[in-house]
Image 1 (tube, rainbow, N blue to C red):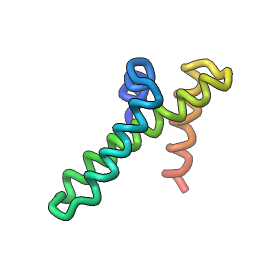
Image 2 (cartoon, one colour):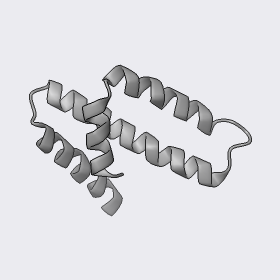
Image 3 (cartoon, helix red, strand yellow):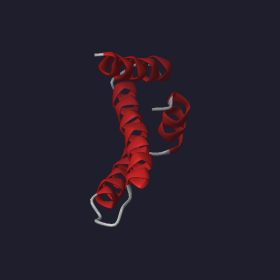
Length: 82
């Protein structure tokens, strides 16, 4: 997870574009010939896209962009620490 990447995805892509990309990456990970390193990269991209989608949802709900980004990062870091 990289907050600058999530911010860039949030600012430059609509939720619809992010969801379409997410579907493609998830399908890619299910292909038989995909190597572990490729899945790791796709997983990192998926995490960043999901973060941008969450930021979109929170901003649409009235939260400031900076606060939404920080809230997502804290939630992810909190789940890693457990």
